Length: 164
Length: 306
Image (cartoon, rainbow over the protein chains, first blue to last red):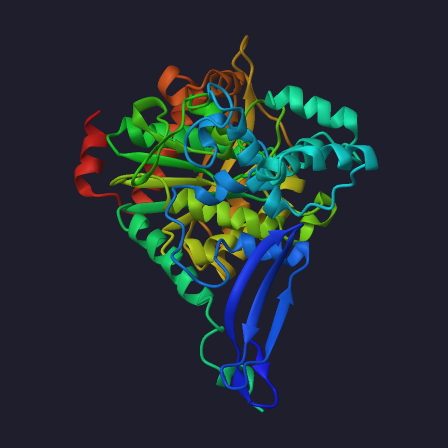
């Protein structure tokens, strides 16, 4: 996919990428001549297809982590197959390790989780520096169990599971 | 206004370069493997994985360094049949150090990554209802990574156990352009033979790799009491089918409950019961395939002196 600035007839260049956020990747292109910008916003399907290519939008060195694609995209896997090579939860002294892994997996998974008002309020009460991790970990937990929405009860379950 | 092909590059991602780097990594890894053979079928349930496990064992028994890759991402069974299931995964700087089956056979399978018996392969991603759009791409990426990111070492032979069906065979084209051959497994039933003919066509026309030949599994049943041998299915003689498809007929493997029992135990029958009719048939098939692959003379010699 390429972008052309029609008034300048110049190929646009990638300036910034961000996400995936709720399954959408944002790629900002700019025209080197007139500085006009456009943003490409992928839908979750498009994000996943890019992901399946195992390439990095915006460029950069290809991942060298052995089996990094399989280890980061399998929804459920053995502990030693978790990205990073070490057990994600079993044997880990840090309860946030598994949350972090779940969060990163969730980030690429595309969110769209429905939070009840009470659950959202409780989420907002979590300190900001861990809120994003907690949110994504809980969403991953809910998705894996097929919960249609995240309630206080689901949060309690996840909390017990992660030892938060 | 400029057209697509008049614009160089893709704006900065260099996706082509990244894919090229992946391909180079794969090529470098595969360069150390002397011979690569895919084993395919038409229908599922023809015993293809059992054949792969036993061929791997038969070649290893004859002194070859062998690897076995389970390319059936969603229905992996090879690790179980080669006794590698449950072994701990170890990652080194060079990649996954493959679990080992009997006689040091290197085994890689999705089964080794899954946490338990009940867990299927599921990917993090958008809703699974839309997965039909991207699941195939995830499987190809997985297969590429299994090939490229495993420390196979200097193998004499890598056997790939393909999933059933004709649709997955073309996936090998970008991954293994130098595939040495495809072995086709069928049952002597009309239904199996109907589909296997399609696989042969795909292998010939899309893969452009030599079809090494046709193996007939569950060819007959030998009564354990009176030793009478009788056919299990009423299909066309597979030898004639091979002739009709213009491919070599490699051999027949009789139905033998031992095969299933040994697969469950993780020890191929050619190693645990080498004198059984099934083991003898499989060893003969390995010998014929070895000849077709023109294995290095020293290895053939080693095989013949055992």
